[in-house]
Length: 268
Image: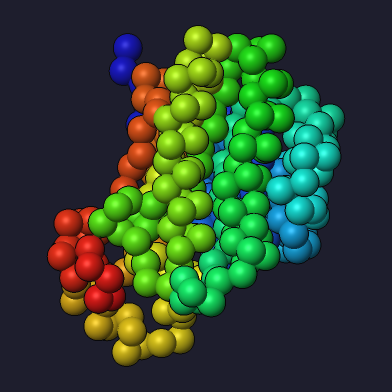
């Protein structure tokens, strides 16, 4: 018997619980991911160094449970406390999205050790700490999905000018993803990454800069900048059971610009 067309389709993440780091910004990728996961049925914990109550309220308006926690996730104690909070509030952790990230524009010769440590700690160390804390819970249930937000700047041809620590951190995320995937695969835990490029966020600097938006769009085969929702849709697939046999991979979300020679040599 054919299913009635009026019968609603099941949500991809119905009954799942998720943590999204770096999701407090109201115009960022983290917020878009949190809302998309919620639309697909997941309860979502919002974690950031700033208060994420606004995004948590948006998640609740969709009909899902949500809480916001504040803390520096490059501190092991706070990373572990975040995961414990998720388990206590939602009963389990199924999904971790490591999205927190910062950038620092500075010439290589002017970089200080503190500059280096700050970016690496946030963009790479926190991914390790949060993933390890989450994986220890997931292993016990033999189920989990970890998704890391990298960047095309993590690839050799994608390095950005005056962004050495950022480039290195995002390259590290790619190898961390692959390494974790190999170690955690026997426990039915998948680990994947997405590598966005040219996404309209506050960090990209394009918001409010129409000239930059138009000029860069000319270099993108799809002829437009990406939006946070483009990333969120890809993330939702990778953390769903639709991607049960996908692990250790990185999906570029770049409108086809990955092979653009002007981007490759840093002219953009």
